[in-house]
Image (cartoon, rainbow, N blue to C red; front, side, top):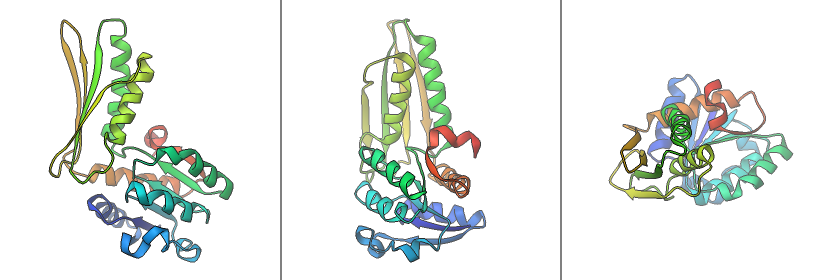
Length: 228
């Protein structure tokens, strides 16, 4: 499979490495080569089976517009752009393209979402309040993280709750920690996911690209990760 990786940050570099380990042909395009999406011409994009984007919120929408317009298949690991999701889904559908997006490509995090929903349902009506705390590296642009927002959504939906408070921290080179706290007058339950490296994200993104390579349409990683 021919894979184009957009973004040469720490996660993007690791995605390229993992894709190569999986036996794929990999090309990496950095921001200097792709200012405002100008490097993503139709002939260039046509040379790849799947495109994986780990760039930044201000770049990813332009990248999607350029690539999806050609009917390309894209896996988006960048967060902070979901206000444009309806537009990007519509573009993918009109052009017969494929779009797979997710706030977190770690299988462990996907399991955390499921456990959090089950925990919330089990505690319903028992006097518990919920809160979330997340910590990421200082260069992460969106705050709170997309993962924290997805975790809050899972809890809110499972318990029919209002907005769950999220406390965000940016520190050093932290790969990412998410903590869900359920507190009552009697006790406290804590559910934690701590990333030791970015490799889990990279492995998930590459597996998602392999899965998407034979499909069209728009998918949320939360809905397909068990099929990979």
